Amino acid sequence: MTTTTTALALVAGDVVLDETVPARAPWSAVVRAGHVLTIVDLGGNQAVDCLFYDAHDTAERYSAQDTIAAQGGIFLTTGSVLLSNEGAPLVTVVADEVGRHDTVGGACSKESNTLRYGHHTQHQHACVENFLLEGAKWGLGKRDLVSNVNWYMNVPVDPDGSLGIVDGISAPGLRIALRAERDVLVLVSNCPQINNPCNGFDPTPVRMVVTAPSS
Image 1 (tube, rainbow, N blue to C red):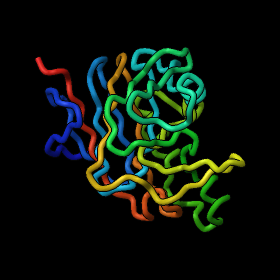
Image 2 (tube, rainbow, N blue to C red; image 1 turned 45 degrees about the horizontal axis):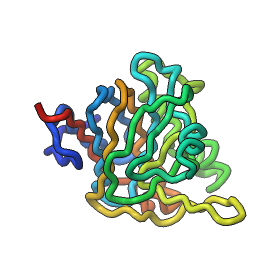
Image 3 (cartoon, rainbow, N blue to C red; image 1 turned 135 degrees about the vertical axis):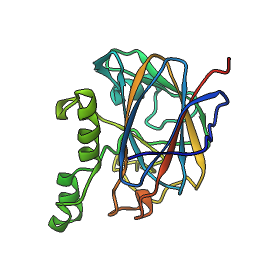
Image 4 (cartoon, one colour; image 1 turned 60 degrees about the vertical axis):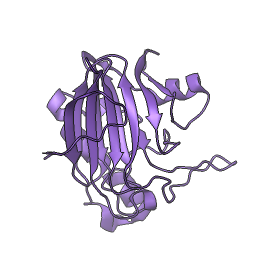
């Protein structure tokens, strides 16, 4: 369930949506072409797992591989263009108060939790379950889940190629702004992970504010 709150957009405009996503919960919306989605990290270091689809043809969706290859790097920040599996722009990062966001860490699942943290975590809610629950509202299933973006998540890569999931570099109130380059379906899991430092072991709410260019 979402609740309406006061707008706090990073890019000025007319507010068309302003919702707070509770800790651990999923969320989705269609962001119209030219509109800007501001994601506010209310508590700090909250990993926000995110997928993007063409709102009119969900077979065209975010491609981490195409995005990384086109920009020549694995981290996202201001100026990054997120590409689809057809090589077309879906959204552009137009402002970023954190400076670096993850493209390779993936989404937690019951299976990965069990492997990483022990069998006792098997029944813990995870991002894959959030994506499936929210995606079902739009006719999406497990085959439609692809590699996702992890906004605010700190995943450094060592020289030997190994990944780390470590304390975040965000802070309460920091924001990132994404401009939709076409009508885009945005699917979010406000990560429920409590076994690693990506959320400071304490998931917190985030705010979603969509603005249209001022008339």
